[in-house]
Image (cartoon, rainbow, N blue to C red; front, top):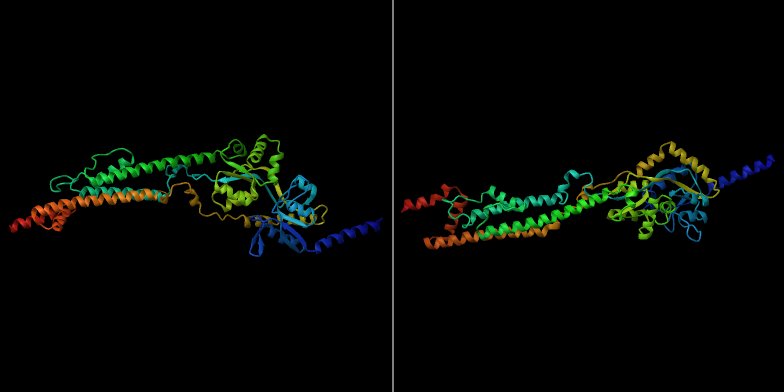
Length: 459
């Protein structure tokens, strides 16, 4: 009897040694940051984990990508696809990937102790005004747009001031009449127009009326764009803020949501007896809002109006990579990732011990920090993504510029017409009369009267 036990133990030891000696075929799935291709090489959390396990147990290995790009689920005929299917069919010795431990999978494969613990949550696009409600009045326009409005305001006031000085209709006799359109009054006038309130006196000359009319048109269209976008931004903000849990997600129909088709997350909602989770599953079935991979879920969440449901550890990576995304605080259905092997595989016990050693040594935490490091940049770009940019209203600014140029041109033509009339009546040069008029309007009064005194002394 003892001899038989010795032979059985020896046979089992030889089987383990033979399994360890041969090159293991390890299947995985391309999923950032677990396994990624970089040229002809592969890198990622799972690739580093396989390397550490091989050092602990002393095996050689060959990594291959799963052929159908699936994790593993049973179809209607009872056949398994994905990495679980490859393990069952003997096409791979191990599956090292973010493979969720489930009761159904435990029936067909053996799984080691988990190397990552997580749960279900969801991500969606950030509200454009998240965290900046104190400045929500400025949110409809970007900073460039506000700078453009300020420049337009200053240029219009200056143009109105110049037109008031140049046009003879506005200021007929600089020596006798008081100039009504001072720089301060010009600012007051266009401020009243911007508030849709008239501030008199109004321009009398054609040139001044052109400048005033074009500014009124600019102000009305600008205010219309501001209030329209203000309503849109506030509506978007309230829509996102109101969705902070799975119950909020199930109780609304504005934002669509989905998870990976045939994955463990979908099976959780399908088999759950919780009425909220059942409604979520029925919505995904009705809308067919499933995605084929986590990368597609991240992309749709970034595009907006979509919430992607998945493991919190994967969603944290998306938030670290993409500044436009945010993850809900609620986490449900705690689960874990583990390594899968064929039923009865002698590798499972050794792999479990190796994973525990790596966890106790802090190596798993180091790998987590390495591959989940935040690389989020350009948060300000998203903050203004829903705000109107200056190039969105470049036509409006161009219209204002043309109107101001036309007003100045008309004022110069009015002054030129008066100078020609005076030159013809006084038999003088038109250029000298025009220069004298400009000196009277922009120079000091003493400089303007000096030519008249010299003419009188000559006479």
